[in-house]
Image 1: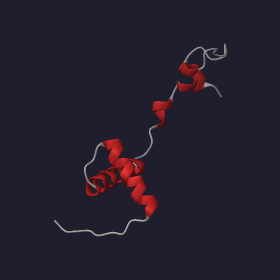
Image 2 (image 1 turned 180 degrees about the vertical axis):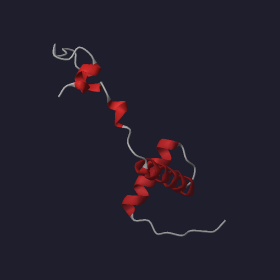
Image 3 (image 1 turned 90 degrees about the vertical axis):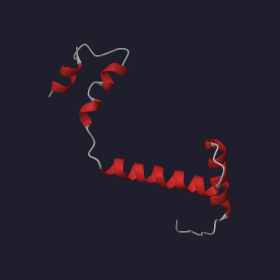
Image 4 (image 1 turned 120 degrees about the vertical axis):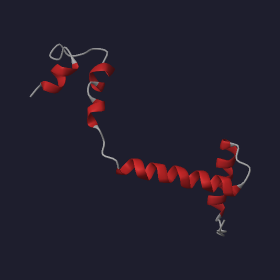
Length: 80
């Protein structure tokens, strides 16, 4: 495995140590691997198109006093 050397400033090292504590990681190398893997996962997800259909009806369901104008999610999204 290739070796990667880097200099850490005080702020980065403090954040890295905090991550190690929160995730119960034993080494800085393990913490950096976790960070890189999670960053890659987020970058891949960001490139996927957002399916806005999954948001249909959220506003109606969250409103405890729905408008009488909209009796269902279909009414809400079908209004002009």
